Amino acid sequence: IDRKGECVRRAVAFHERGMARMENRWQGTGETGERFLDPRHPYAIDLDLFGRASLFELLSTARTRGGEARLASWLLAASSADELEDRHSAVRELQPLIDLREEIAVLGEDVRSAVNADQLSRWGNAAAAPFPVWMRILALALGAAAACALIWLFGTGFMDIAARRALILTGLAEVAFYLRIRDRIMSIVVSVNEPARDLDILAGLLETLEKRGFQSKRLARLRGEIDVQGWSASRRIARLRRWMELLDSRDNLAMRVIGPLLLWTPQIAMAIEAWRARNGGFIARWLDAVSEIEALSALANYAWEHPADPFPEFEQAQIVFDADEIAHPLIPADRVVANSFCLSSDRTRVLVVSGSNMSGKSTLLRTAGVNAILALAGAPVRAKRLRITPISLGASIRNVDSLEEGQSRFMAEILRLKQILELPTPALFLLDELLHGTNSHDRAIGSEGLLRALIDRGFIGLVTTHDLSLARVAGELAPAAANVHFEDRLENGRLRFDYRMRPGVVERSNALDLMRAVGLEV
Image (cartoon, rainbow, N blue to C red):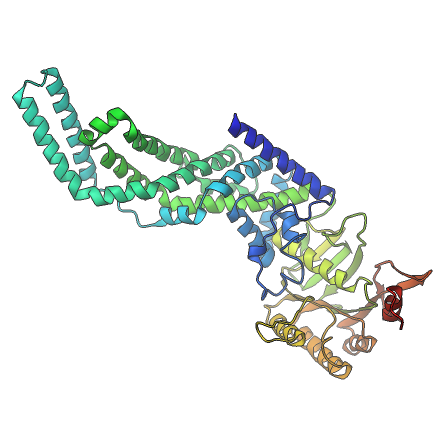
């Protein structure tokens, strides 16, 4: 009853978390994935990939550490178009299967809290040393002979000298046999306890997946990873569970007396090692399949909770990021403002975005970046339509100085720009306030040279600035570059923003207005 009650509580929590996401009160309630954050990654920090109120926290319903790691790996690197199409089919199939996704989350909680996946995988992959058949037959024969001698002795009321002699001789033979293999037997018995328990917990989740028939190619393949050579994983694990039950029966009072005569522990240990030799190599595959299905289930949950969000279209004939009414997935639907723009290798490669402070320039960059991550992970996107090439991604939005590494903010920025230039082609770059850590003269020259280098590499991207002198760079690079801007207006002493992107260069700055709005006398 306690176990069933715990499962019900987990199921309730699963749906409560889903409701919290849909009502925009999910921030700080889920797994943040901060252990996956690498400060040297080309976009993870800049695009709020991990941490509180991050994209990972919004997406992740995975309950095993392997599932979380698989989802994080998809967010950290783009996949091929074929791979993404496979994920789309799998996510679409899982999307309406709420009961299955609930079971995966509920059972995954047990796996997360009780299964040491790394240790289990090492135990399965360690070189097996099964005992030769003749040795197992000899152990069985000696145990049977000892049992017969004991029955004979009991039958004669302990008076038959021949029966006693037979029992003694059999016992001596068993002692000699056991001493030869004792170290190996004890090693098996000591090492199997925790992996067997972990496998028993994992079996519940595997059995849930075994009961399902899947149509998509990816899910069918994963289902095949669980069923190996006609035997399901849960059936194989049940065999080990039976051996463990027999091994644990050594603690029974009767078995403590007759077990040594029957060579009970050596025979069970030999059977367990034989099981590991046959099945140990499959354990990593089972864990991998569970991790993959959990990650796909997380994307399916997101798709279910955002039915209006479409899957992206993939373009391979040219480099393109064509977004129609694209919005930021982490901003609530009742506050977010959508914009449309197109970057492509045969038209405009770069948009130089000008505008005043707080007008929406940086948010536009993050909107493009986060939706690119969703698209290249296999998830739906927050847009009316998005056509995108499977592409590398680099961002320079949130550069900070480092006392530990002795770097100024400007040095951190140019090191990130170098990293972006070295990305594999094709690539999408997102540069906020380009080279803002230096003077206007050097910034203008450096910005133009950098944008030319990025265009020559075949990259596409967005660059923001509030320095109007830099907007001329787009004119010099036309038609490969174009200017767009965001506006603001002053109403009754307060600044108003509509966050709508418009063509051309912004005509005014609001820095002084903002300073006066907070009470600074300037």
